[in-house]
Length: 405
Image (tube, rainbow, N blue to C red):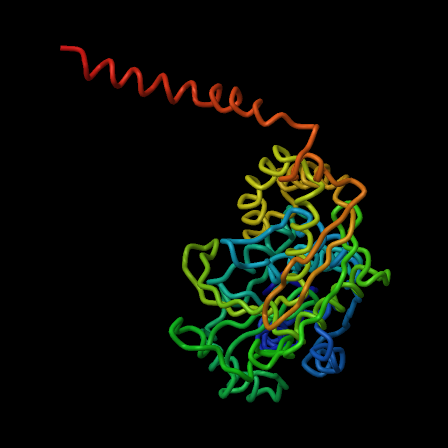
């Protein structure tokens, strides 16, 4: 007999977690509490409490975590200019530690024996969720149905759902899986499993295609304070409100679509299609702001950490000591990253038009090609010869060796 009495399930209302909810009740004969984190899914949360209760949940938490998500997870990552393998802005990965943290808080409140999630045994999310759970409570029991049951495909899941009368959004005509939050929406599986197949035009949710974007560009100004965006066109907004507005602007202009074959932490390659309109604008603007406010050596040192920092997020180590250390160092680099960036949004592109800051390290007096009195160009000769000294010595030594009989 199972010793599991009560489980808190990370529940999205999609195919996987809808089936899992019923499966947990049937398999463990336990109480299941469904937890849905509102991090910007919008209509995907419609009737989610009703659906969970109808499927067998004893209780449902639907928590609005949008502001926390953007302020405490998205913005810290963008202060670091985080990007995985040069393309992925980590929209799914960055949400998992927040969901895991709140799920563990609910487990403690409800006195639950275990937590459960809908991640498959092939993907990254199982690692991200479970590293989060175990970092917060080393003794928690974890139920990962995809590693236990014999429902080995989404086709079988759809048959299970039909058998038990479970309402799910996935259909055989649209079998791909998607994950949405305020930062992005992702698509994978189904027709996308062949990396030669072009994404379906009706698949996209947050953006128009660049071809269908307006023929006239749109100019915006974004204000930063210590590395965080605080306003658009002079209008102050909350973190979640600002990112939502950037999504609207970027989506209107066909910005932020990415088609990637990435390297999963578990060892395989996978193909994912992502829409990240607001995040794409934000990263471009933030880098432009840094370009005039951050010291060269500090910037180069921080930039050297981006691959590792991004990998930690992607692999699920948000609550690790190395992540904490890196975040503190990165945040220190942002003390003077304040000012205004002017951008042009046009047919899938984000173009920097200007940047200004009270903390700017850029000086027209030094950079000018006109006559100046602050920099002696003759000084460059000694600078160059000193930096060339080791190169000259190396060449002299080679010449000496060649001339030796």
